[in-house]
Length: 302
Image (tube, rainbow, N blue to C red; front, side, top):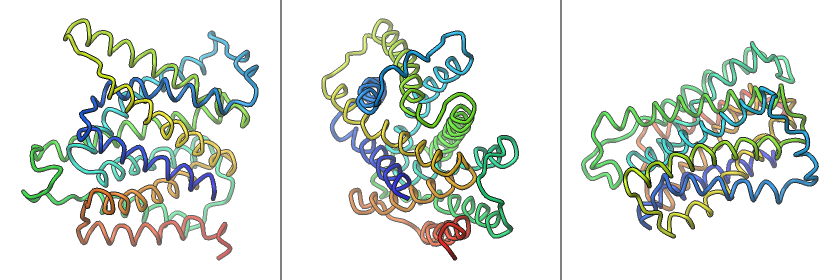
């Protein structure tokens, strides 16, 4: 569970850092672009053998799909930042974590890469996980809310939905690419190619906005992005290691990863930003714990 824990901690750090951007006047989009430069540098430091990059072939469809995945990273990150700032950290975490549904279904019935026979209890745990995440996503819209008081009501619904769809696409592509095109020892290679795609797409969009809108890139946004890049890379890095250690079983890994992220982010948001949970949120957290036990009771020795 070490890889699970590290991935969850770094993922929660992403939400918390992006939640703090408005306070320090960091432009979210500019920070997202520069965060991928830090991702590539972090990946190079973690790559034991740089000769791995000799395996990159530009006529391979896997390479191009991986670069396209990087473009999706930029879109998803922007949605995560907007949702964290306009709605709440908890809603952002839960919207992203609801995206476990499609990768799990693909893992069970398309990739068929689960490393254990799922029982009725396991399937029931998956259902409980989805219900728990849905309950946790229900937000209060009181006028005294420090986060969403200025946000239109429709924004509170649309942003989490778009975050859910984008994260769902990313998770499915990550599972697909890691199974079909990359060996277990090529985790950093996979991620560096994806982050390079994000740099190409993000930098092109940023340059366009500078030339057409006259946007200025401030040093605080560059620094914020570089800080963000380290936990961003490490969160996915350890998630891929967790997938590999469990035979790329998305049906097992994604539910537990997402629920643990939900639990930790809710606690961290309460401690740091004093975000409050309503009764449905609290019941969702309790149900999430039950779901984890039901999904992984074999591994827990129960």
